[in-house]
Length: 406
Image (tube, rainbow, N blue to C red; front, top):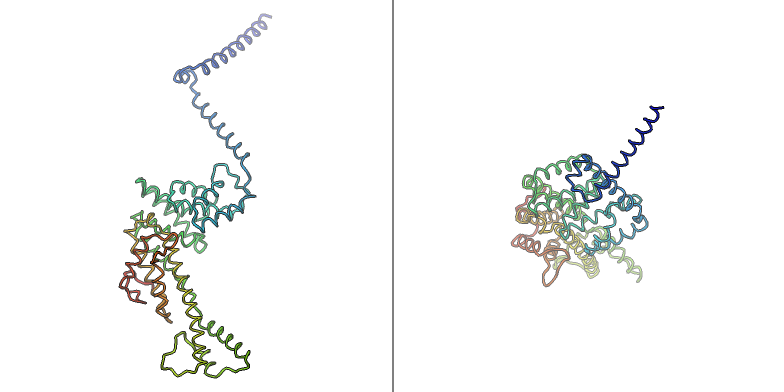
């Protein structure tokens, strides 16, 4: 009996002590006790505070994710808006439109991967253009998190970080070189399956060669090759003399058939053999032959003009993608201009050489004069192109110091 009474008393005492400890602890924690005193009484207090903060952070993130709108319904509209705005260089609209996809806990899980990748690529490009490099670094990391196997977000991230830290004076060359080596390893593994657009590749090589002196020589060569390849792709489809002759023959035959007239043998011969050059004044030719040649010459001149403007637009796009404000213009600017001019001259003079008037038209349109301008094409490139073309003869790629591809 005595043991039973003693046990009940002990249990009551322990319960009372626990209640007392709880009440005392509550008073100490809620009544403004100094932090150092609390930590001496409760050594695990910092750990419990960290656990509490982590729980609150997780709860807030879960709630934010649950409350976030599902982006599947609006992603197509957002993508079209971003594409249209990028075409007119309205970068602020692109940034605002794509902001929904990079905020924490955005509901991108239901958005098609191709559309999400395009939206993030447009955002990174729009952030780089107005030199918002800090935000570009952050967005490119989100891009990487969504698509870890893609090379495009790596290119944006490395170049944006190079630009950000170079301008801030906090560049760590060793860290950037390590990231670049990782990118190159992924590039080698991808082989032919590289999704990085040509203009982004050109911009990337220009940035690396500008702000990473230890790799400048290597990346200047890569930049030169990329520019040459882009121009080669643009210029490989020349105006077709055969197509022009066939179109002219069809038109002349139709007109002759309409009036019940047959084509002369001289006209038929010209329609088959015309080589794209106007006849000499002393060439004996009847009126029908001259008319056929003039018709084909007019069509050929029109196609040559379209071809020249396509080359000019390509050059403007290439140079517009390399803003002088984002590169070391003194280090690589002249090389870029000489590469463009020498490659154009080399390709135009490759057998069979095109009429020199094509290069004349390209030169005249490259540097807008008489209040002409090209959207996004800065005066610095206009000045350097003008200086590069000064005194250089037509179809003479040796007039420039950059050696042509053989």
